[in-house]
Image (cartoon, rainbow, N blue to C red; front, side, top):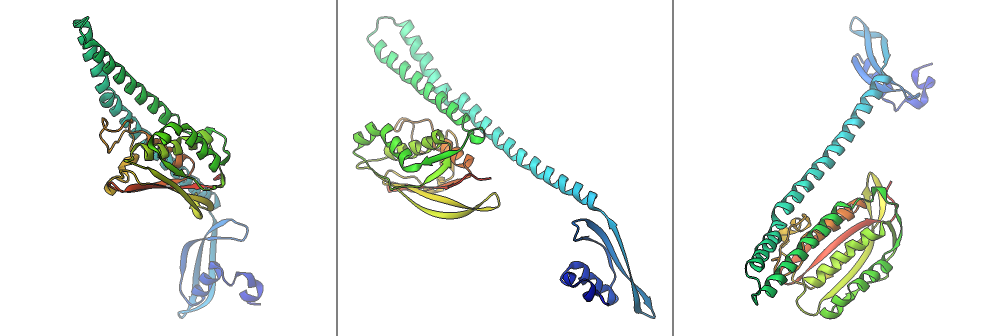
Length: 320
């Protein structure tokens, strides 16, 4: 019997290909082949010649399974170390940003507090003291806002929090209740469709929509219209095709220059003048961090004085 009769299931295998090559007089040296029993062999096919014509094939195979397994473990370990290094780099970048805010943004209100406190102390009884005290109070209030936002940002980590089914429609309606006074004051229209449930950490996703809708209200001129729309898509996440929801939050506010579409997610980065619009510049950074912790994505599009569109992609089910 020939090879094809003895091993009909192996005719498409690498082993058979190399065997045919060697029968044709072409030696194959030290290739790694996987056997049907899932072991690895370092294999050589050497034609034995008589007057340049092969009369037999010498096949030598050495079991190298343990070496291959160790090599795979090293590759996996290296990949894990690379992931950890990336996380460490990201953490260091955030620490640098925190150091900047502590050394720069917090210094400004602190200088004002010291300056106006000294004026009150040195000029006791002056009518201007009430104004000085108000400035001190405003500076202290800003410092508290910065510290609170830093704490919120540092606490975003859902790896240790259980994911639960969340009705996005209910969640956004709750956010609208929180922002009710601002919505009424601005005479804004916030349009929300019936949205599906997804798996997530509720208080974190609430922060996402509170910041996004709140920003649309804050950076508006007149008659704000905020529209939320969605569609279902599929994305590959961690190597698996996953059902996802793509949400768009569209507004007709002041917008932004599209060249800054990535910078707006940087902690403490503000495109608008701090005296014109309140805020600490950490809201969108927190939004991005929450979305990424849920294995999602967020992008932004804007046009100056025409509005902005924030697009969020979130997996519907828990990502394994």
